[in-house]
Image (cartoon, rainbow, N blue to C red; front, side, top):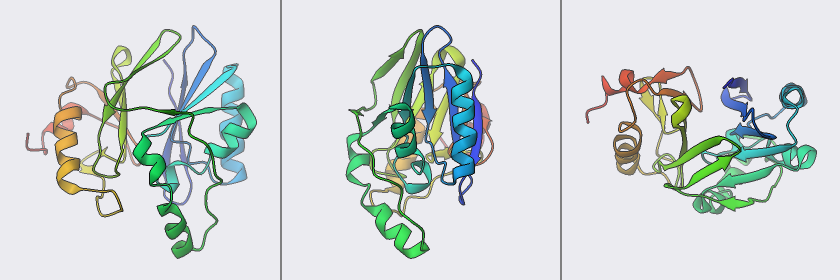
Length: 210
């Protein structure tokens, strides 16, 4: 499975795109595309996949991870999945945008609430949902066992973890999430985070005291 990577917006957020080759689904993880140029680049890639259905999976709803959601809904009729608590915390983006003097992300509707333990099936593609709250109230990770990859959002980075001082954050809960949900994955699992370079679970075990 080919996973395309786009580094976007002023916070260098990582947007990921892949598709199930046996069906018509294109999956986008955390579309943070903010500028017209960023959105055009992502659109060109999506169009090249020839998929008829677009699914947006959000690890959480901090503004740098959702700038492009409404555009994908408008252009492709994309369906948006995230945790119920993440929808409830969308309000905090208003305060961040006001303080940074930037426009708010366009509003969008969440089509499906998901939570840890859910398994999402898109054609032959099976994606396990993992609960990883702590950076945000309803943070999620997406694990594709067949491909040996997990998308961790802002919970776990290469050599670091996400901050926990935003509304809905909890440092103790974040560490608990990482240890129980992510460090339980196989050592060679590729970690694709919301910012920065990728890593593997084995490398993160070196410095995380489990």
